[in-house]
Image (cartoon, rainbow, N blue to C red; front, side, top):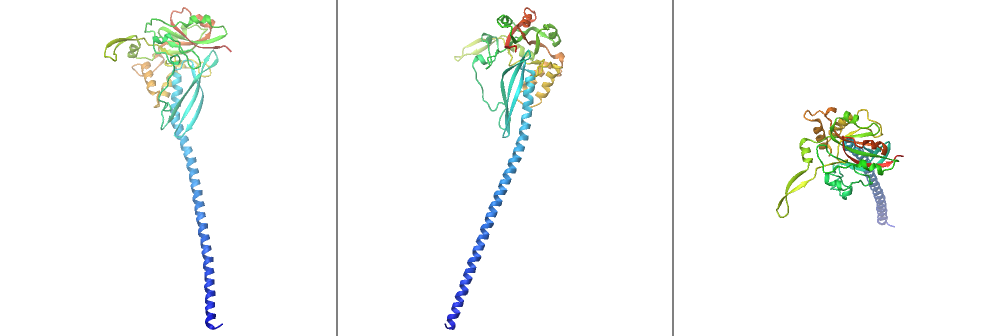
Length: 358
């Protein structure tokens, strides 16, 4: 091998070594880059997961706090509205459901009849930034027999709730009705093993102390129906005639019957608490309910204000002396309720829930 060939071989060997070194270095670089990419991807995934977890936990905590703030006023209003209405009816178990920026509460109701708990139905209310207290409900419908009684024309049909319990109705003392309910006459058809509630409508308005003294001691006075109407509202409740035009343009007078009050629309004072114990100061609890429930901007606010304003009068300060009682709800068995017959101040009587004594 001559000198030129030897130099050429050495040059080829060097180039081959350089090529091998380059390939090896390139592979190492690729592996390093690939490893760095996977580290970067893994780091980004972990960061993303961590951010999602933090946002989820933080969002859940924030959502819960917002829901509590949204729920509280509605819950207080519902409880206090029940305190000034719902004769002999109490809010029972409440099931609470938190959702995104809002929620829904479902509750049961019950009545207490001579110490016996009687399930009387259920209700619900919603709250949230994107829903109203009706849960964005656009309306309800039901047959007449399950509806409310509004005027004397409704007396032709006894109304019930979905459980088959009778609706109690009340009659105003300042209206002379063509007919009245006298469900005390039904007592003779009810067994001695039953207890029941009865709505009484008086011949005029009385003070609370007068009512306490008028009713027999052997019946349980559970609720006072109070006068919640203004002078204008009383006039509007009487029998009236209004002119109306029919589709052909003919004008005629239409008679509107005098209004009565369903137990679902009246206001009054509970004499007993939800455990069936006598309230120490039922009048004060009634007054407090307006303050506690009416200070929140809920669907009950305007009615809290209307009833309070009408009862309190011109000075705007509601006291016991302002409260006038138009009727009551009493409970007892047949023998005890029979003592109410022929009492001159009872103008009408309406039977409600009837249940077994035990």
